[in-house]
Length: 211
Image 1 (tube, rainbow, N blue to C red):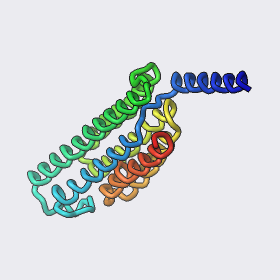
Image 2 (cartoon, one colour; image 1 turned 30 degrees about the horizontal axis):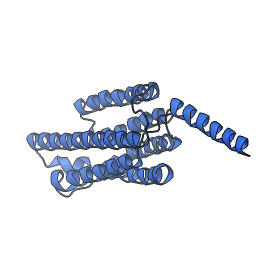
Image 3 (cartoon, rainbow, N blue to C red; image 1 turned 180 degrees about the horizontal axis):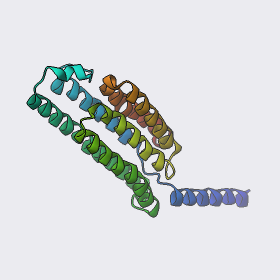
């Protein structure tokens, strides 16, 4: 019995080592939860502070504004989205690092390096594409593009970590494609994709892997 028990323990240890060497396991559900909350706060700031209570991004909304007013509004929307991005990345790194320390895992490994490269390719490509859309004044396609390219990044990341990330990426892509058909509701899709979905994902991850 002792020999069989020891064999089982050895197999579990080997399985754990193989999993840790092939997958990035330091992603924290709390990072997704707080990233979602930050996105919702950013959406609320955009709606109530920048767009003056307007949740629709229809072209008619900007018709009565002069060029200077539109430029100022665009500037603050960019600042708002950049602040959300920086804060979301910050909390993701913080909670992932904290989880890796608590579980004795290395956060910077060959697997995490490969995952980072696979994530950066669609993110950088999407960023360049969004700058092009901005310069061409195709503003209503910016939020759909954000969602689609972010979803592609998550799909790539899902190959190196939990399958939940892969599924989240597919849903983000779907929401981005739908939002491209209903561009007037872009801010709502922003809050759904970057806010509510992240909160749901974070809670699921936390209950499955951390609680």
